[in-house]
Image (cartoon, helix red, strand yellow):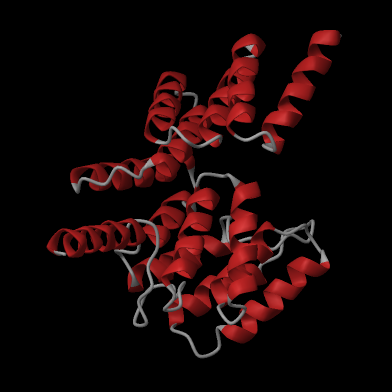
Length: 267
């Protein structure tokens, strides 16, 4: 009996640590993601993990399931609006629901929803982006400096590539010093940032570490494929895009890139 109790306690501790390293749920300052149902919480955590790792196909399914189980939470509606097609009925429905459901929540939850107010030229509502959204993430991190989701999105929203790399490097260093190993999304963001700044050796190293740290994901292979694709090393790019599809056959980015490589090869 003691062994069973100890096992349950250990499982709860692991689960709590996993949750705290991905998202916040503080009524005082953090984004209020969850309800009191642990199964529902787990679905949202999984959705956040896929979203941050740019595995949007799986993220959409998780948040859709979360809304089906409990349509009263604003945060899954935010994520579905962000993942929906521009100007679609689905996007506007989830945006409307998020605005209604966040009314009695804390300030950071309202700020989180307000990110969707800013439409792109193509009609896309998205929590990602810079400019006005950078200011919103600045306000959010002031109120919740230890929120993992807010920390990452704040770093990723930095306006210049130099600021972005510096913020992501600092965040990665702090998380590693604290013993946190769930850092794949940061490594991925760093890899693309290094590519943009022309630091190709650092970019490749980041993507290699990303593959090691998130072995069950499909986006690490897609990102490495992108690295080789931008260098016009199409043979290595094909290897990694195919690895991404082996991990998840519906990875649309890899499918489209392989089609593009085949078109280029046929010329």
